[in-house]
Length: 256
Image (cartoon, rainbow, N blue to C red; front, top):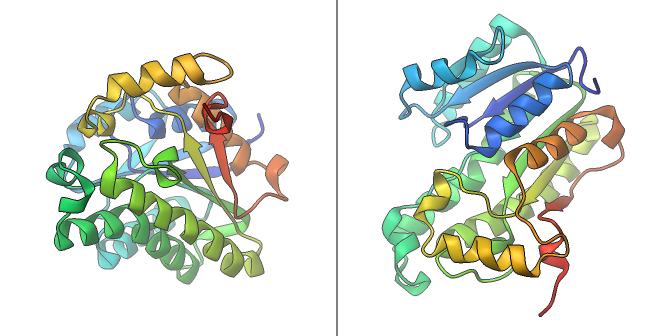
């Protein structure tokens, strides 16, 4: 029960196959009170049905591309739940055509959209949470990223660039928020069959390659990523900040 007495905000819940859900279950089973946000474009009824599996959980609509929406959402959470001890940023989006086509064909608007929703939203979330004094002492912010930020992965395209920006933001946010004792880290998860992954061309081939090449010869699960998030939210990781931790069965360590 490494999170007993803590409140964890999971931002970006979509369905039971998402990494956010794996993190939510890990947090709950380790003693945390879990609070959710979902995209303003998601069906609230679907999210509400899902989170009934966690007693007392509530979800709030939040448009991560709008500072006003984030602020309004956080003010409501603060009023109804008080301060939180951790935030999971599980938010990313790119236009379908910018994933399906070659990267060189990425539109200016598509590039800006992917960077805004997938990377800048973390900066906005951190800043607004800090300004509202929403974070308890020794709080932890965790974001989700992927190996496509480090190496070119066919079909990942503009999202890889956005995730690279997210990882750089992690380091700068860790520097700024460290003054207040707040830690900021990212988890680079191995490929998982999530709803978002369906937008990546030949995703099944990626899973096969990881299973073949990774030292542990298998693909990672949402719960394994969630367990790492629980660790990063706990006091067991008090000296870790500004890091990108790979949870990919060792695939990122392999050359050829």
